[in-house]
Image 1 (cartoon, rainbow, N blue to C red):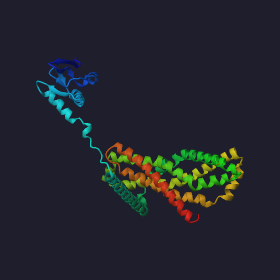
Image 2 (tube, helix red, strand yellow):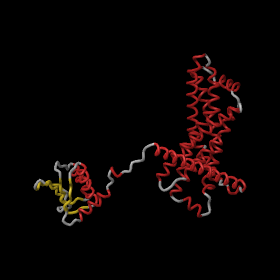
Image 3 (spheres, rainbow, N blue to C red):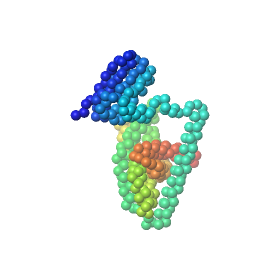
Image 4 (tube, helix red, strand yellow):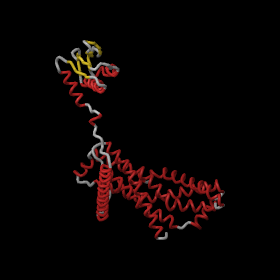
Length: 375
């Protein structure tokens, strides 16, 4: 049975000595830690006598080194006494490995350092843009190659991704769009009622959902749901070196993994956008009926008379571009995974953020373009 460590103070000619006895090993670390944390002295010097130790390991040496560093920071001169010098050498080795706060390199400050950080961030951003464009070129080249040779298509993978990214996402898309329609109708009614123009809430709902919100919010949901799944799945395969194994077998990861996902999104996002439009209009119609007394037949009549088919067409035109952005960015981030599972998590978060940002940016560009075209 091992003996627990003890600490004994002894004053010898105004030179206090701290005698450490017992076995200072990891098995007694919890009890010893309490003893060492409570140890203090008002003397100018202190000797730590290690001759009485029965056993000492690295954890015990860490306790002694930490106590010595704490007392020396308070102005106490601490020396170690050990007849064999073995234990003192172990304590010295551990203390040399401790990271002192003074040794932590502080980041450079000032205008020059700030400009250096801005320049480094700009260079990194430029390299990322070039890498993304290069990846887009690879995807397009593989797509053309598969078009020329239809036997290269992986139909099973494509159908599976269509189900995962499209059909399985219908419930959340329907719920989100229905609630957005309800909110638009309620808030629009509250404002238009002040001017006696409640009937125009139909135009507000139709144009907002068909032209912008339906496809935009659907794309954001798909980016968070399917885009993150793309990055996580392919990134995990890269960490496990499955992509290298595929290349060894003569399989192209872009053709096998990326193309089915991107094409599935391009096919399914317009369908999801259309479903979102219908659901949003239904939610707006129900709230208009409950809040304003606009009957469903009047809502439909107003919708047919004052809503141009181009409002629906604009949303559908944007859908494939948004899908391509989400798919390419998500798969590109997956290819940037390096080293460990932590990298997978960081790249997954980055892919969602970048995909949503680029989708909103593309939506703004489309809005300006169609406005200039007078559509």
